[in-house]
Image (spheres, rainbow, N blue to C red):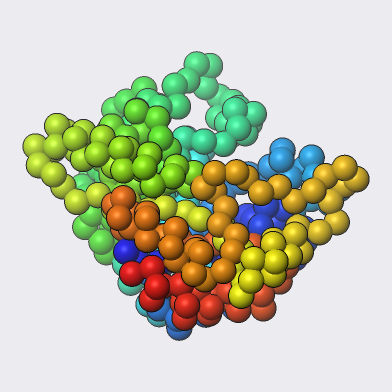
Amino acid sequence: MKFSTGVPNCREGRLNPIRSVDGAWMREVAAAADALGYHSLWLNEFLETEPRVAERFDDPPNYYDPLVTIGYLAALTRRIRFVTSTIVLPHHHPILLNRQVATLDVLSGGRITLGIGLGGSLDDFRRVRGDLGTYNRGQMMDEFVAALRVLWSDRKATFSGRFAKFADVECYPKPVQRPLPIFMAGEADGVLRRIARFGQGWIESAAPPEQMQQLIAQIRRYTLEARGQDAPIEIARQFYISLAGSEDAAHANFKASLPNMKPGQSARRREGEANLIGTPGQIASRLKQYAAAGVTEACAIFFSPDAAGAVAQMEQFARDVIPAAT
């Protein structure tokens, strides 16, 4: 199992204090992850303040665009990969996204994984794609992925669909990676079938090991049906982690990461498997169960009040958790 971590480009009010994240924080995390041997850095996308964050805080969070941020951090690193986890694909026209991602892949030396999802609010979708009278976001996902593949491979790309249509588009440079990996997020049957047809990886952030094992089996079955062979699919699991030498210290760090909430609000630990809060031994034990279920990449994204706390947890995770979990 590979181990990755995250850049807090859109995590204020969820894992980090409001108005705390800046370029220096992201540079420190990227440099530490590169030096410590993490496999990749994950970034996410919100177009505007997330409703759950607005409910809990008076001040708005900083949300940095993931593709622009990757360009910034790729120039400061040498080895580590970058994963968008995830961008909301229906918000991005494939001709423009093709050029942005291909440029990043070339300039980074082939270090980009495009993680995509259908999510995001319908209000955001209507703001961005208000030109569409009727729409089907699942169909848009299918068309946009297929359109990207054509744009990344053909000298003159032509595609005809309901939501994407173009002819003889000549767009260079092409990505360094052939194919450039596309990971997809979600548990719906349509998502799993889309991964089987088009994807190189699956991103999940909530399912426990037993459920993941069942969903992985579905993906394998659908992949065999769609491609005629059991093509390799990466299974990437995201975790929000508060790590410390004792459970009390881990919970204290969790609470300190989300200060200054509105009256009546409190730090919420989502029950189930979204958050892991505890000691290196406790977290390593849980991660071993995911590895046994078939997870090939675990992304540890840390609750932290500041950059120093995030880097300290990254160092502790690399030193004490990874060896015990593998």
